[in-house]
Image (cartoon, rainbow, N blue to C red; front, side, top):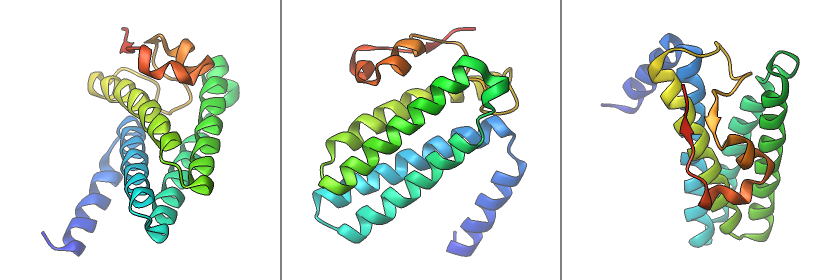
Length: 157
């Protein structure tokens, strides 16, 4: 498939996806961009690092800006704080040229991606990312993101 045909296909996919699928796609993009930034840090490719970091931060900014804090209550507030934490870790990684904070953020994003993908597959969730589906252990993750390695989160529902 040519680049332009691929771009058109992706545009059509985005335009026809429901909002849940869009959230899942945003998480996939952030993970992909951070993985690229991580590789670039390891290979000392500063331009590649900057590109990956900038794109990942843009995705996180989009996710954060779509939160409906009043409607989403405690969960939306917790997600807001988690997105802020991830942003800080990405910036730390970028300025120190240390890939370890990116590994942490990638793990967090994979957990969130998994939860949203499950909800999107079931098709039974809020129409926007204002409320995270009830996920076992999510409160632990949000209160202490360092528990990522010890927590196995599953969608409950």
